[in-house]
Length: 287
Image 1 (cartoon, one colour):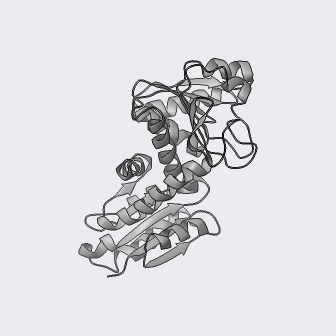
Image 2: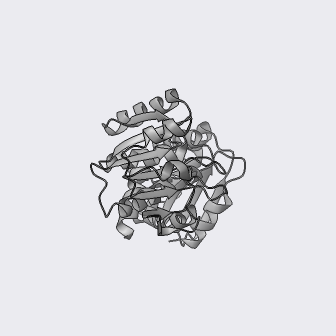
Image 3: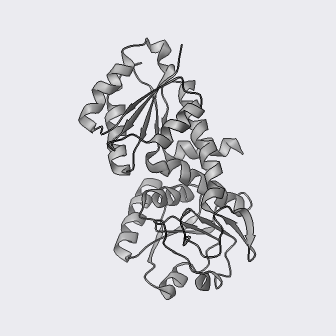
């Protein structure tokens, strides 16, 4: 029986990127739906559930994407809410590549600290965005002492509180309004992940050179100027002034492997829900 992936996207046009990854991962048939709202999800899901018997539903799966993470999460809730009894299929949530990118970034951070993040001080710059929030969440679950930044303290505090409630850990918020506050917030950090918008330098070289404890840095911005000054976009465990460095394309190779593996994993059973933690676990299994 052929595999079918049903792509649900809140954007008017479903992602071509995600479609290409699905095809390259070996999906036999891809059904793409754009402009999907939560009230439309049940009937779309039912179309996938009721055309195959329960024993064959592992050959059908859902991918939920789009550029708006909150809208994608609402689609996920609607999809899982439509399942009942044996009538369910596996689901991958990866809007804007947030989960697969975050997983790849944290794997790089772990490698940069020789295989363990437990008890290590880590910072996520621009942690209020979808990727930054997931990076911070995964770092916290790995046992790191996580600091999160935003341009304003109230936004950083809101992210720290939200992730802390989800993980049962305490995160340290700080505002990165200027070089002095940035340096203060990063004092003692062994790993820094920059997860901000394209073309914005979050960690200038003048501040980075003063971080005596820094051992690893990961920049997820591929558009110049890069998020961390001194990193090259293709860096993959490169030595940059005695610090192990990963650029966006260096992380991207791992992200693509995780994405493809997650698509394949959907068809191993009919009851997976792959969010950030589950995607990260798949990434760990690749190393």
